[in-house]
Image (cartoon, rainbow, N blue to C red; front, top):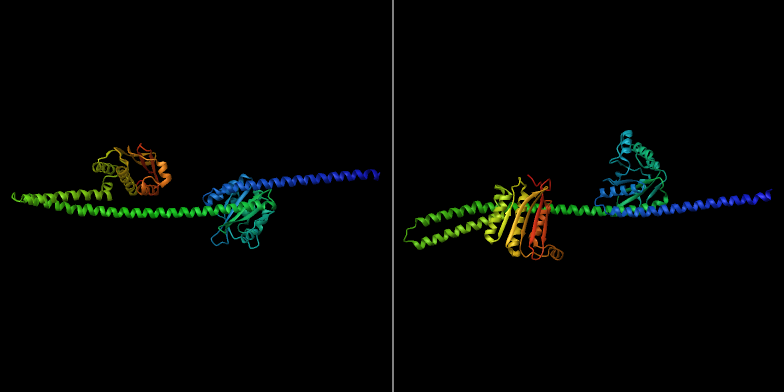
Length: 444
């Protein structure tokens, strides 16, 4: 009996061993595939994170990408003392968060705590490596201070977070915070993938930090440029008033006095009367030049009658001086902020000056209009035109430093400058400014 059953028993045992080995091989293969898929997915998620422009965008993108893979994300950032950490972002369900907060009277938002000296989080902060936690509840017991422990314990219990990996986030070689990834199927073998992802996140945070610095620098330059422009306009206004009120009045008085002298001269002094008449004419000519100079510096009409009549008057005077045919079409506007009025006036000055100097135009059309929350002033001529695309690509700006300054001034007010031109087809310049809550308060 034993001689017959022995081989069969050994055969069955051998078959069981083979099945066990096959199952282990299949499990290993599935685990390798899962790790490969996780590594690939985290690599793709890292590319998405690189496109974020602010640290807050980076946090949200991390959360969205990891949530899409079926994991929870927790982002802790270092507090100012470099000792405490703050929970800056999490993918936990807001409904469950509210339930937990109601049960514990504690809030997850801006949760700030000091990791315990011997806990996993402190070890990650102190070192360079990720840490794998088989039981997330252990993190609660070891790292979270007693005050916040009920809150995190409830979260872990309700969400069923069994395993988690924690990785340092370094920005420019300085610890920025920690990335926590939690899920049911994580293992110690997933640490390299999470480490690589955390490195990509660190690069994204560094890029976002640098971008913020650049934006802050641009904002400082924009404010400085506005201050310079404001100072220039104040000085122009002072000079304009001095020319108009002081020099202009003095010349007017001088002209009247000379006219009285001329009228009082006896007939036999015709030569003297002629010379006085020439002086009166020179005084009148000088007064007109001073008036135009004062208007160029700062048109008094802007304060007296508003933008539309001022632009119309400038077009009329400019047409008389240059013999250009200028057709102005505008409409009365509500009271506009001072920067808007002077910006559009300077734009019209520069645009018409360019037409007179370079366009060889016969007809010019100027139009002031407002539509859909945008105030636009356009200047169109039938002159020579130019290849705007080619000029932009070679010299950076087609119309020189004058309109470049206008573009910067418009952009500082939230507006834009548009240029349309083709050789032989004239040129269209359009200055557009928002009228509803734009920078600088467009409407008074």
